[in-house]
Amino acid sequence: MRVRQLTLPASSVALACAVLAAGWFAGPVSGQAGAASHVDAPSTFADLPRDGSDLYAFTSPDAPDTVTIAADYHALQLPGSPLTLYPFATDTRFEVHVDSTGDGKAEVTYRYAFRTEDKRPPGTGAAVSAPVRSLADDAVRFRQTYTLQELRPGRPARTLVENGAVAPSYAGGRLMPDYDALRRDATAQLPGGGRTYVGQIADSFLFNVGLYAKIRFGIPLVPEFNPVQFTNANTMTLQIPKKDLALRGDPQRNPVIGIWATASRRSLDVQGGEDAGWVQVSRMGQPHFTETMFPDGLPLIGTPGGLSDQYQSRTPDRDGDWEAMIEQVREPFGPRNISLATGTEPPDNPRPDLVEYLLHGLKKVTAHTLNKDVDAKAVRPAEVLRLNMATPVSQQPQRETMFDGDPEGYPNGRRFTDDTDALQMRFLMGGLTGVQTDALTKHALVKTPPKPSTRTFPYRPLPH
Image (cartoon, rainbow, N blue to C red; front, side):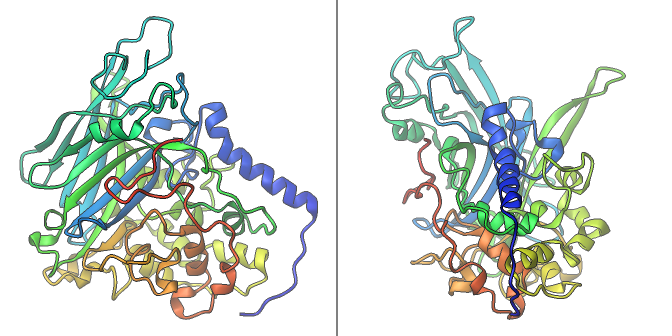
């Protein structure tokens, strides 16, 4: 790669840091936060409970015949205290969709719906009145429960969990001395195998502001740090047998699945005041997709109604007809920014390698055409998180996955240890085409998630 010398005025660096900090830390302070992957769509910027932040999918390390899928919402929550409360929205359908045929439509959807029981005395905000050691304690004054349904086209909805318990927002060590016990109370077994946990976790996002500033803004010299280091999020984490996700129930013949998550809120007909059904307001697929592909994707400087907002309301089966999105993938702005920040020569446009990996999957790894029973003519381009369930669990996971000889991890699913910022930088600069890109990320300072994952389900760190 050809490298040129680069300098930047100190005032520009200071301004860049201020913009980045404002975009990220406005969340906890002002009651606002970003959308999918934390900051990417003006329309969902102020809609915290429906604000999807991250989607993960991987073969469960201690139960390799299952897949774990985690959909995180309402990111950038402050560390626990008696007065912090981050409930799930009760007028919203949260759904995880799985496509085994590659047509951008779900063969199975897992739908969560929430209810609230609020027994707090008027004028008080504390959700807990005394130390809590189980979710059955009377000291829990604010409770949430959920229903989890499995939906398959042409079949009646199947209820997997009724009145499931939500682990409440962490109220600090004095009032919740053993949050792990509360999490065990909130873990439900599913009929036919599998389980689910719904509640608060420490955010697992391995995020590096220094790399992000180069990709998004073309700014070098921004200090490397993780802005979610001490923040929490809400999660719906599922563990599902692979046979329930694979085409024709056969994960050996048909190992590839596509996964995305959505939040839809109830809408009213403003003229008649009647229920007008459900409107999708948030969508999550691959990490950092809108930030790295859509120039209007930051809530502070984005354009309401622009591509990032349109993405939130669209379904993957329509992506193949969305020429504006395909054009952004084919001729991305990210490489120019990275070139400006690092002095590295960007690849020439157009970029068929990015179109393949983002919208079709890698041919020998995550493309739906690897499924032996799939109709190749029906496979459509779609922005989803793809997972090859036949890939063995890595005994030594590598943060840069395929570039470090690890076949598991993003873009083959996504684990909590995957460094998606580093990976996106290398993909954008031609790493999939054989260009040597290791120099861009090998000196990165942020190399691990904010808190280590646990060894057993739900694999999420306890909240701060």
